[in-house]
Image 1 (tube, helix red, strand yellow):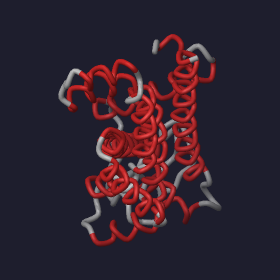
Image 2: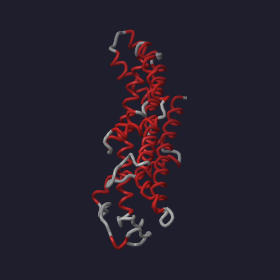
Image 3: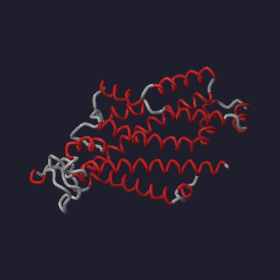
Image 4: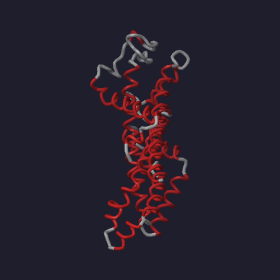
Length: 272
């Protein structure tokens, strides 16, 4: 699948540019003069101005710096949780799709069981019993959001294993791990990429929800979700404190979903 094919649509190109800007800004943030913890006692809860482009929060901290560094945390949690969920889901899906029927049934019943539990409630309960922090959020989201990826990978694996080249590789007694890695995995890679984009959007939304509920990122660190939570007390006077991180969350998730749809459409065209 060529990158040019994916970015051919204006929407996908705009989404890629926006995500690229957000990622670059998050990477270079520590090398900029922005300080998310510096307090200006003379400018507490001030509106946007030339000195503070996004204004300040109730403690006098520059809100632009808080938003930029909050984006670092949101993206970090999103990407690492997505990587964990994609890895677990891919391994379970491959194992279920290319193993004995008993293994397939057992794994799919496990997936059904985990999927039947309200995931947000489960994540909140687990988060309460673990030490709050970024690592906990990443582990909890990654550990309980891989089920849809596992189903997709299993379905693709069941389809690919019936193709002639896979059947021939099995006929000449190639080791199963080699068949999976060399012949099946490359064929289902586009599906994994689509599932990964969906997992990324879901992970970022989950992190924002947990932080908004107060069981996510803990002070003094901030994410876009925690900024929404702390902005509740100033909605009447300073609504932009909630609008800015809210729009960034929405735009980022929309961009990720748009790119995921573009990858899926490019894959469907190549398969046709």
